[in-house]
Image 1: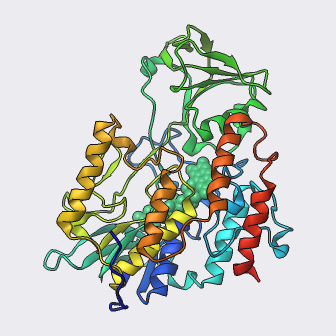
Image 2: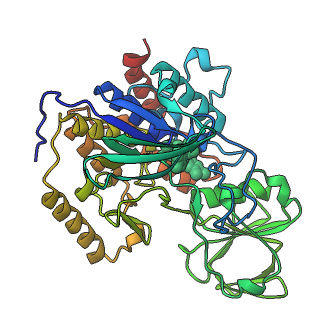
Image 3: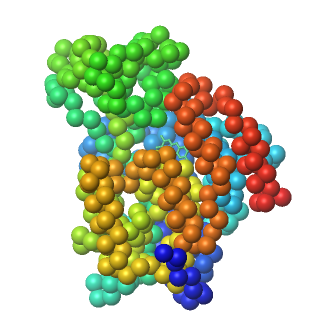
Length: 452
Ligand code: FAD
């Protein structure tokens, strides 16, 4: 159904929580639509996960609920998974501009280049003037007497502040609260454990035998990184057959295994393929949980088995819309353009330029979506997973249509499909060896509209 696009009507006072990529673009889109915006950022700079810091949490598994939280999850050697042309916002290309050539011009640059790009973006659109740094939102919820207003409590060196907003846009990221693997026998296993959230540099594993659990992109990336200094790395994957035991090409000290059957008091780790290794460290590369410790919606929005819901199209909770929205939940996707499209939609809905369906209709749509997942035996924890390669583009284009904005560029889609294949076929070399130069040419022809 085509959305109702009306003339601008309303300017709202909006709180954005977080100044990572999602919060930055949300702030830009909201201001473009005439809203007054305050961005709350608990750190002292923009960029969220891309603001790399070497410090880690005191508890290497990040389980202790009283631990001071470190937001960042990136490791020192990290280079982007997605090529830069694909990664950028649609109207602010992440290109190798001549003035940036002295930075990191690689197609899959290191993390500091992404931070530099986000800083360029914030400078270009004067976003910092909307941000309150070192100010953490500790509570956000509807005002008891007027459910259309939102009370936001925040904490800074100046003390606690309590303010009323028309709307709250949640952009707090979801790579900070770790998930862990359940390992039989782990209580008496004597080695060290760490979650990848607290991994920064490989030297800490020099000459060790390390078991890495999880073969998603970061599990594989980290295994290769540490294999350069360790004695052995054993990568345990749940997406392989139980008998799997393979040497990973390019490394004589890196092996792929099936899952762990048990670990023992003598330091051994026994895999379902029958192999046993004596390991110094187990690293959990097992992902993260959605976590909104500040959100007080009296049960209207919950996180159950990692489903944030109920949410209409991963953004609006039907009972609290449009006052509450979430930018950035779906994964794994090309995040920045998706954040941009979600933000445009939120900004236009709040301005009254685009209408949402009724609360009942949104709830019905959401229930149907959940029923479809259940019928396909997809667990709740995969609610925000864009599993099919093209599903994120179907979603992005739906958002673009709501906002009367151009759909995702064909070159961007094709580049994503190609890099995905390259990761599988040449996981060791895909960041420096490619054959889609024709798409790079197309992308740069497109970028001229924004860079000249
Ligand atoms: P974040 O960047 O996490 O920002 C959230 C912000 O909210 C933070 O600044 C935080 O301090 C702030 N905050 C949180 N709680 C509060 C609070 N209560 N009050 C105030 N402020 C708060 N994406 C790519 O496009 N390409 C890649 O190659 C890529 N590689 C990745 C590799 C790893 C290991 C990881 C973990 C992620 C990777 N990503 C990649 C995804 C990356 O997370 C997204 O690109 C994006 O940066 C996420 O932005 P965000 O704004 O949603 O969250």
